[in-house]
Amino acid sequence: PLPPDPHATCLMIYTSGTTGRPKGAELTHGNLTANLDSLHQAWGWRADDVLLHVLPIFHVHGLIVALHGALNAGATAVLLPKFDAEQTLHMLQARRCTVFMGVPTIHRRLVNAPNAAGCDLRHMRLLTSGSDRLPDDLFVAFQETFGHTLLERYGMSETSMLISNPLHGERRIGSVGLPLPGVEVRIVHPETEAPLPDGEVGAVQVRGANVCKGYWRQPDKTAAAFTPDGWLRTGDMGLREPDGYFTLKGRSKDLIISGGYNVYPPEVELVLAAHPAVAASAVIGCADAEWGERVTAVIVVREGTAVTAAEIIAHCRRHLVDYKVPRRVRFVDDFPRNALGKIQKAELRQALCGRE
Image (tube, rainbow, N blue to C red; front, side):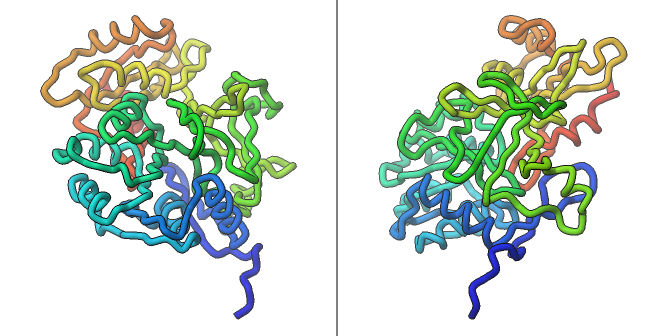
């Protein structure tokens, strides 16, 4: 057979957003090859690796990063029909797996599994986390429980992987790491798109052979997604440290402008996560006549504990400047999530904003 045309579409991944018409990102043979080659370099894939696979295979994370990564290296992939924390820990040991990829929800359940304490994972070499921000407390808890430091990385449907903490080197808490080989990343002003200096929060833009050629049958969406010189507007906010590490600050659509100040939800969520009664949190902006948007904290209370809205606000006041402190606190039993466990903030805003 003839080799595939590197410019031909070989895979269409629909974006995981919850608003508007779904967009099918057209990934070419060349896109996949470029990304798999860069991951092979960055993560040291080997033919003797054994991947335990528990992720859905209709997303970039489970299909390209995990399954294609293993196949590209000639490695072994062990697929579980569904995720179960106890079974996963058992299989990681029984099959002498070397690689495991998950999302924060999965890693949290592994840490809390009844058989976690006696789990021996010394044979493993790579455990990654992605598809949502890895909370600081989970980063530490996983390390303390299993003796492994999770490798957090950043990617999206339109590009597969972009940035990763290093396999060998500092895996920095709160950071997604350094650009993969062959990938360019820059931070620009959200309105002018002028490049910003290190340390300033702006819009994340990327460029490279891994970036999709556009959205299927949506030329207007494709044109809006790219700059004239070929940079993809990711829709994420972040900053670059002087040593090249990148930190994400959330989606641009989730940015809260309250009283003229920019509030980045992940910063508030980190403070909330430090409260002993908070099992999980999401910070959203709700329309407000006085503030423009009011910072609203949505809380899942940790089992066996109790906390009031006033106590949550007081906790935040001890750690945040005034304009970042939540003006409202809502308690819920759980969050709406997508297939990868990512909290769907658009659904939260629709359900909770305007209700008192």
